[in-house]
Image (cartoon, rainbow over all chains, first blue to last red; front, side, top):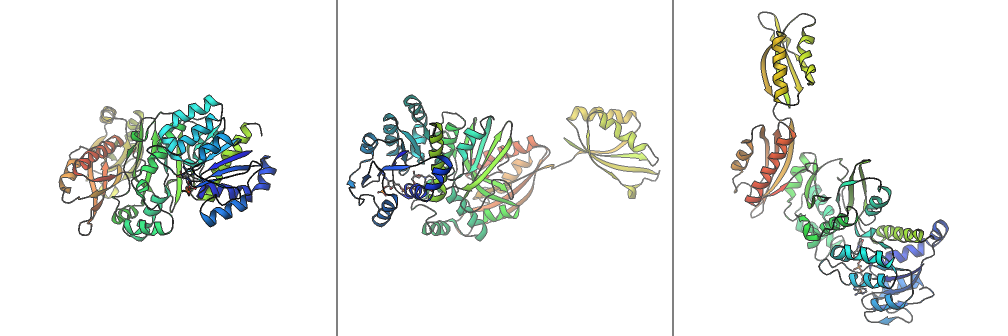
Length: 337
Length: 167
Ligand SMILES: NC(=O)c1ccc[n+]([C@@H]2O[C@H](COP(=O)([O-])OP(=O)(O)OC[C@H]3O[C@@H](n4cnc5c(N)ncnc54)[C@H](OP(=O)(O)O)[C@@H]3O)[C@@H](O)[C@H]2O)c1
């Protein structure tokens, strides 16, 4: 399979590392030979229709912060040109999230579909802004569109719901969908420290963004609720349809009072046909959603199976490459590979 | 609804069965039976305390009539309070926004009582936190109490954190 990667940060590099380390496995177990023919970041691009030398590309990108230094590398914002001009089967769209405009991911994805290329993305922006449009465009163009990594990171929330549970009617999905806030709440409860101090430390550890507003105020979780509502429940929901309360007002005392009553405070996203909501909730210890640290957890309420819960890492380049690679193999199979 | 009832039975074999039959006949679900031997009456009657669940008031009325017909004396009758316990948290200027008034508003609902309040006052300038346990006779009343509290919290600018299962 010929692959174009747009965005070469944590995840772009993460998926390339997986291609390198798992080359034998992918060929043996799935008959899949991924060939990365072009990579673009914000500064430029590297192209080789015969397949880029990934270990070399990774080394250059890690050293200089861009792929431009790869032999024959070009400078400039070249993503759209690559998508149009380089022949490939699949485009990975892995650029930063913008939840207002969806850009630059939205344009990348549309262009890729228009060019008849399958699309895999981890980027919530385009999904939140234009889910229906993209879904329809993919169908019209006859291309596959996968976005497993956009919700739950490594946790196969969308795949489980849309494939293995597809015999059920899903009445509710709820989950701890943001690792940063879960980490903050877990430490507040364990150490009784105020939020600001833990946020600062989380930033130093790379577990929180420089501007953690989207996480703390529940917007990131609301984006995921919106994506689940659209993709799994089939509701044409917008981000503004989600009633959102973040964790900003949660005090260390509140986490202690909860703990004394055998409960934990978790930021929970809830998607139901009649209501979309994000807010801090009390979760009894031992409950499927009572996961600590940066973990994510999701529970489905189903008419046949009852409740099913899954948990795992919601972020991290290696962990999330599990979902990206799963999407690629899924497309490979769908196409008869 | 849960009913607590004390009936006085003669202390001879077969009496208890006679007292339980009308409850079972109307679909009552008996949760516990306690003989109160230490409280035997001067006439040698034995008080038995029962807790059972019935669908509604009308069913309870039918059971009472049947007991009377069977000659069973019922000496105490009450809905057992606080069967459903719900824990919630509040964050904000809880004291300044008159916590007494908040509690009174909830207690004003028949079958609902605030049974516990734990307050952690925030340090200077910071918001306080509280854990409140609400006892309600049944699930609907618990739900009503939570939605009333939500309205109060919104008015008073408090953050209400409810259980993930309370949806
Ligand atoms: N990290 C995770 O574990 C995780 C998990 C799930 C979902 N996601 C989502 O996946 C996406 C990628 O995450 P990440 O952690 O890999 O982000 P990242 O490290 O910030 O990488 C983003 C990459 O996109 C590039 N880029 C920015 N604008 C571009 C443009 N116009 N054209 C081409 N490339 C452009 C950046 O280039 P420069 O470096 O040159 O600016 C960078 O290489 C985000 O939307 C994120 O929310 C991430």
